[in-house]
Structure formats: C-alpha cells, structure tokens
Image (cartoon, rainbow, N blue to C red):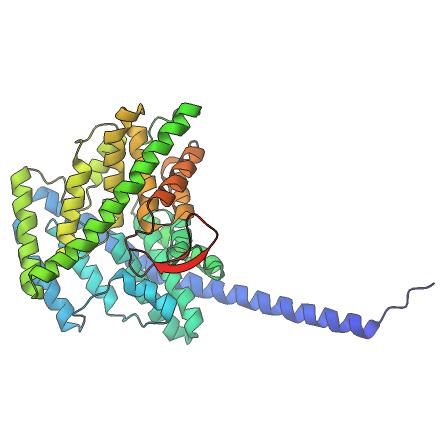
Length: 428
C-alpha cells in the first residue's frame, strides 16, 4: 500500500508552525529590546545611586560629627515625602503589590527613595540599599512600560526587569538579581515569562556599572571544610538557628514601626525622636560600627573576627532607624546579622568562624526573603561553587524553619513550606 499524503493538511500545519515560530521570534526580539532599554536606563541610575552611597559612606566615616545631623535629616526626608504627596509610604511592598494586583507605582518614588536613602546613610542611619534598588527599579520600570505603551501584564514584566537591573547594579550579582526579582513576589510561583528580559536588563545594568568604574570589592573567601557527616550536621544546626534568628529580625523590624506610630502619631516628631535615639545609642556604645550598612563588620566576620553580640545590636539599630521612617533597605542589615551570628555561633558548633559567617549570611538572607533559589545563586556569585552543596542545605533548612515570616508583608507565599498544598497567604 502506497503512502498517499494529504498535502492540504500538511500545508496547513506547516503554515501554522511558521506563523507560530514567527510570533515567538517577534516576542523574543521585542523583550530583548525592552529588556535592554530598561537595563541601560536602570543601570545608569543604579550607577549614580551606587556612587552616591559610596561617597556619603566615605564622608560619614571621615566626619563623625555627621551623626548628630540624623534627626534633622529625618525631618527633611518627611518633608520631601509629604510635599510629594506620599504621607503613607508603602515602600517595597507597593512594588510587590503592583505586580500582584496592578497597583500603580508613582514615578516620583524613584527620586524620593534615592534622596531619602542617601541622606539616611550620610547621617548614620542603619539601613541597606536594596530597598531603594527595588523601589527605584520598580518605579522606573513602570514608567518605561507606560512610555512604551505596554499592556498592564507586560508592564509587570518591565517592573521586574527594573528591579533586577538596579539590584544587579548595586550588588554586582546579576544572576542572583534576576532570579530574586522573579522569585520574591510570590513564593512558590516564579514569573518565568520575565526571564529573558530580566537577565538581559540585569546583565546590561551590571556591565554599565562596571564601565562607570564601580568595581565590587567582593567578600573574603572563607576556608571550605571537607564534606563529612558531621559537617553536614553542623551546617544543618546552624541553618536552623539562622531560621529562628530571621523570625526575630522580621518581628522586631515590623513591630518597631507599629510601636513608633502608636507612641508618636506625628510623622515629623516620630522621625526626629527616632534619630535622637540612634544618636544616643551610638554615643553610648562609643562606636560607629552599627551605623550605615556595616560592610566593614561583614568583612571582619568573614575573616573570623567580630564582636560576639554584633548581630543583636544591628537588629536594634536597624529597627530603630527604619521603624522611625528613615529610608533604605533591610537586606544588607540582614547579611550583617547573618554573617555576625554565624561567626559567633560557629565555634560552639565546631565550625570555622569565617565559614560559619558565610553560611549564616546566605542562610539568613534566604530566611528573610523566602527565596531559596536566588540565595543559592547568591552564594555562588559571592563565594564560588566549591561549597554549593553546603549552601544548598543551609538554604533549604533555613527556608523551612523561618516559617511564614519575611521582610515584605506584601509578599505572597503561594504554597505551604511543608506540604504540597496551595495556601496563598502573605508573609508575616
């Protein structure tokens, strides 16, 4: 029996496949262009912001008296936000909510958080920079999406691209930045549709930052122990403790804002009093180690030598700063807390302090943002691949033991951490 093909059917299928492939090529080229444009714009802004943070940090370290201006800097921050019509600043939560429920991100958020974070760091407030990265990237991304005339669903992708780009520009970790921005919105559901434009925007932003002369110094590389049953056990125990400390960190940060507002209703008075408390505590301790980001202490922890209770003091300083209304982020302080806690606990568990600091740093980051994949990639970009198995275990364990707590109240946890069950709840 001879084959008698239905040529009409074959032609229709070929035509359909060609049309389908054509649409895929158009989609790819379209997002390649949009991702590149977002990466260029956000990369330039991120580089400027990084220059600003580095400059004010150096200025503060060279002029101890700047700490006394912190209460007055707070008054200026509140004034600028009020003048811009943002009396209730939702911060990073607004960026996450915009992707989940199509809330609008005002473009004025970008210069406000830029200015507020720079001023906070100049005068010694304890905060990070990634909160600004996510807010700047999100607001600029939405503005670009509207400029391009994109649909609301496509604007969400551009917002994620903006977050990835500025994050990569500030931290020098484009791969972790890409996955983090896709993973942090809804835990358990990753927005893979944003993968292509996000990696393009993050890579370009990172490259622009490098071209601008900003080179990430990196962190000291700790000694990596040989794999053994007891090393696995010790890492697991450290990760459990990091998960519990992350709950403490998140609860204190969230409650500090509520307590401030309950005791002092006026925005101006609240931030002024908060600034005075931070100044007084700094003078009482006689050190500037807990002001700003605290990068020096992180380096000390990763070399094996830092104060044993530094993690508790950093939690206190960060809560007092951000709870009062100063600007910045929580992730760098979380890295500080994780590194110093890991350094302090490691000798008790029989681990090298520097290695414990590295594990603690990544594990606590994973716990507070609920992003295990991004955390593992971050460990590779910061410390190499030699200990990736140990970092994977630490992230897995700390992720589970952190429960449903997190830095961002708008973050949704879509699936239960212990069972394959859809729960769709917000982090605490």
